Every structure is written in C-alpha cells, then in structure tokens.
Length: 205
Image (cartoon, rainbow, N blue to C red; front, side, top):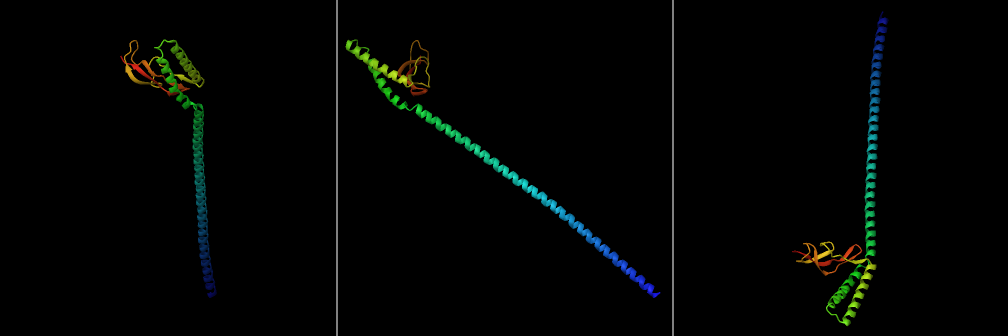
C-alpha cells in the first residue's frame, strides 16, 4: 500500500515537472516568434529607409544636372551675343572706316562754295573763268563723295531734327511755320549715318 502511494506521488511530480517544462518551452517559443517578427519589422523599416535615401540622392543629382545644364545654356547664349556684337562692331568699323577722312574734306568744300558765291557779283571775263574753275572743282569733289556713298542732306520742306540743326527762326513769306527758310551750312550723310547735320533757319511767322 505504501508503495502505491509512493508511485502516485512520483507520477504527480513527474506530471507537474512536464507541465512546467512545456509551459517554459511555449514561453520561449513565443519569445522567439516575437523576436523574429521584430527582426522582420526592423528589416522592413531599414529597407524603406534605404529606398528613401536612394530616392533623395537621385533627386539631388538630377537637380544638380539640371542646374548645370541651365548654366551652360545661359553661358552659351551670352557668349553668342558677345560674338555677334563684336562681329557687328567689326563690320561697322570696316564699313565706316573712311568716315573721318571724308568728314575732314567738308570744310574744304565749304570754302570752295563760299568762294564761288563771292564771285557772283563780278561779271568780268577773268572772274568768269575763275568761277568756272571753282565750280569744276566742287563738281569733282561731289563726284568723289558720291563714289564713297556721301550725299548732301535735303533741305527742302519741313525741318527734320534727325538731319537738320536749327540755329534760328526767321519770318519767310510763302513758307509755313516749321519749314526751312534758309540754309546756313549744308549737311552730309555717309551711307546711313549723318556725318554733319544741315545748319538751317526755320520759318516762324
């Protein structure tokens, strides 16, 4: 009888020990599962972080490339503008290279025309020949000017501030206000450029 009691006691102790061991193993297994899930979560978070970082770096590089392209386009456009401006200035320098020389001849022509004007009151044969010689010289001057695209500025009609220089106002019958009444000094153009404006008196009735 005593032996049976001992056996029952041993069986209970063995059963309780097994239960405790099972519970301990289940707890450990649960902790292992939780740890595995935590590692997977951390791995996912790390992957998302890496993807975000890669995307940010890619965007930054793209912005840098775009900025460099814009700088290149602006620099090229500026260079092209400077090149065109220099070519235009070079062309104008060559085109108007004779401007100053031709301009220096204008006072000589003015002197000849003044001399011709002063001989009109003398009808002698000698003065007529002098007048003829002066007129021939003036004509040759004008022909040479014409070959180099120099022409007189017209003084017919109304005053034009772009080519005329008004130095006085006078009364003039038969002319309306604002029209040129008298030419004081003739003006000249060299191609499309005014090298000397006409000095005139305009009508003010």
